[in-house]
Image (tube, rainbow, N blue to C red; front, side):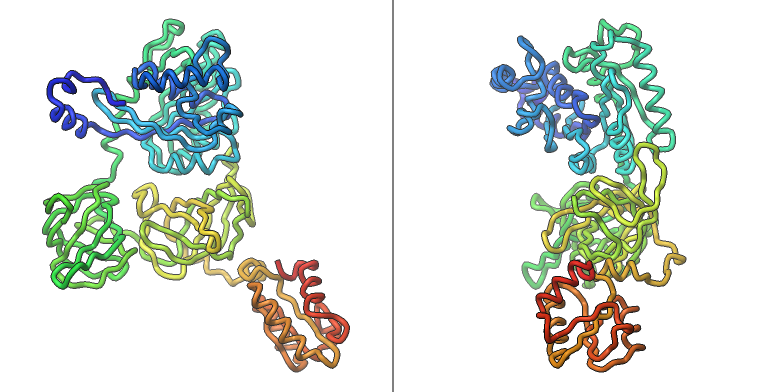
Length: 541
């Protein structure tokens, strides 16, 4: 529901024009379980009179059967917790988005879950936000999820933080409690890239310091949350210096028109500007900026447009058009990035994934994990895999050069997602730190080969009259199940050693038992028997 204005009744066109020109602020609420995130949003909407009467009536009715606030009180969390499982358990599971506006700004709120298992949902909601509201229960202070969400907010480049110390009514509106939580939080984030931090003591349930100042906390001289949301400066956060236009689609409706469609990721593009296309390095000039409503003289970040050029140069989906003479991004097939892992199956170096960076999708893998970051202490630990919700600094290798730059400089060309090649599920999200250093070109290890092929390099000796036929049948079985094996028809210990060094499974005829890792009698065992034993011994996975 939009902010009430007299223009609605007198001049609807003027009202719509005024509404269109309002600045948009995207923010999320995050924190530990039961810190009151959904209740805060409900109170924000309720006290700002941003709820329709039928919505309020429905929430009042639902509060009787699903509310958690006790008899006689409306449970405002039900405004955003709409899933049945959320209402049954009194928790947030999925990201819920709500829209409202005031006389000066439009807002999109992302209500994100607090449970650790839904951290990936929080990262998804935070990826497009300008500001994060981190709630802390005044009774318990800074918790693990408080730290985790603050760290993710830092990684995702969120520049403004409001720390809402909620449920102050349950600690007697104690100033001492509030100040201790503030000091504990500042001690944790001193090494994070978070600078614009505001603290507000509040009670979302009763409305203290949400929209109106609290009479219960006269010792707090700061602004209530609504006033702070209206006044925080965000215009300077956007990158207007580096003009980036990832090409999403080449539009060729006839012989006389070739346009390159996409959304301006950052910066400004003007008709007549000189441009450079990466990774090819070709140059040209913008002939026109085409939209459905007509040609424009200028396009800026967030606008979906079609660019036409003065010259016929080869540009395809995934290329990036640069404007002006700004800092050039990198073009390489290897880079360093912080990765948030989002699925139950652990991320292993060498395993192949699809890496989607802007509009470009390429196959690739994590070449190495430099360290895993402990979100509680921010200490770095050695790791050979990343599990669900873990974060690590990794080197990513892709099979073709991509255009990228550090995430802190440009979110659009500095972020990517990791997609499982079989299920097409997004399994990770990455924020690029920079180029991979040349000293990382270390020799490939046996562990890396094992991870890439999903097998342990092994020499299998087959004996018996049917050994040769069995070797080729077994090779086919292994190949069909995604493994890499080769047949060696004659006994050659040196060649067998080379096969094992390459990370393969060698199926060798004629080798003696002391020259092989495993020995099978082809006359007594079937292909299925041998394959099952290879799985039991974890030769294949």
